[in-house]
Amino acid sequence: MRLTRRTFFGASASLMALGLGPVSAQARRGGELVIVTGENPRHLNPAVQSGVATAVPGTQIFASPLRVDENWDLHPYLAQSWEWADDGLSLTLNLVPGVKFHDGQPVTSEDVAFSIMTIKANHPFQTMFGPVDTVETPDENTAIIRLSQTHPALLLALTGALCPIIPKHVYGDGQDIPSHPANTAPIGCGPFKLGEYVAGQQITLVRNDDFFLEGRPYLDGITIRIVPDAASVTLSLESGEADVGMVTDATAINRLNNTDGLTVTPRGFEGIGPIQWVAFNTRVAPLDDVRVRQAIAYTMDRGFILNALMRGVAASQKSPIIESSPFYNPDMPSYDIDLDRANALLDEAGHPRDADGKRFSMTMETIPGRDAALGNVPEYLRSQLREVGIDLELRASPDFPTWAGRLASGDFQMSMDIVFNWGDPVIGVHRTYLSTNIRPVIWSNTQGYANPEVDRLLNEAGHELDTDRRRDLYFQFQDIVGNDLPVYWLNALPYHHVFDDRIDLPLSIWGLMQAMDEVYWTEDR
Image (cartoon, rainbow, N blue to C red):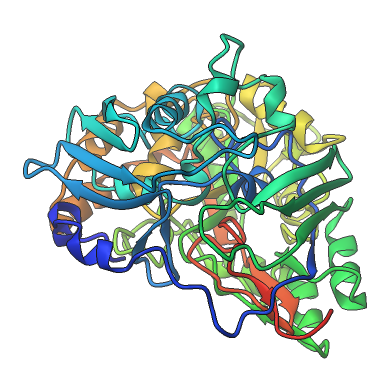
């Protein structure tokens, strides 16, 4: 990762020299792109909602201050340059002048300030802009972000779906922003405008002819088709009905690899760090007892999950920090399968077997339409828990919003979940484990986990600029949660991009969750 101490404090001269990027001489203008997805967004505003479903269309409609490439290098976007104060407590963004929202209104520093403070107040990632005290606007093209403490992840947090610049003149009308009607009919300043949004079916985006990067976007439009399940995604890509998709199902990945005319690659997910885990509601019995959580962990064979259920395309994951990160602690306990140990812990926790060999019953939530992508882990876990006297019922939600609502409200005992690291622990890891982030919002600390020492370590790591010191703090944090097990980490989900070979598709660390102004067809579709 290249957000080094030098990058953090360095002047922006070398970054300004990058400019906004030339129009490609090879790019062909025109044509449309069809993206297929099984993700059904609740709305299209990433300022108040995380996740792929909202981020893919959201990054086309809204622009962010900065953008990041596949090498973790930062580039100008709405901000043509930026500069840190010597003490690291303020960051000045110099905006591209003359940018307009899709409704013709100017984009100013007031919109940047409004957006950042809106994200801070409403987004599930509370730590992302937690240190931001104020955003000053000395003139319409200058925004100064003032911090209460140093913030090693701030520049990354200003990229992609993490920091969409939303119009103050639309969202500043006093209505509740998470439920604002503009979330389903958004106005941004990104490369594409919303054409039509049919919930649960399709999102149509059309070229923004007044986009501030001259000559872009190259495409005439993008259609995002929402299909019911992973099998439909695979069939759409295989038949050529769709041009681009994200695939996580292991069988589908191997199958599409053998389909002529398609590129199948794990590239583009370097910053995402998608971890599949079993979430425990630590506020309810019997899961409020760490011994029960550990016993459940000891019933699972991670090797079987990786090699049999995930067909060998997923990577091991036994920590809250993705194992490819420099902050990952390799000494985390792995909880290798041990049914004797699981039984002993359950006995110790006061849950003896009855005459039928049963200890107690539990319910596990599953993510709608994702059983194949998740490797059928819920069914496997149900059979394993039966071996130690736990009767597990699987509860399938009818749709994603229902599942998300159950977790957000605490109406669950256990659940499968997929949660992203989002490039830096401050952004994507802290939110799950800080007691201050126990909120009725999906992908916050929905487990209700609270440990004062974890809070201390994460808060200290959140403003530490020395990489070695940060690593030590995160190692200590992992040691604690590795014992407490508010969640049990299974594997890194095998996200792959699949796209037509005739598409030039630059992939940053955010994959499709980035502006697609540089995407073009090398041949006619």
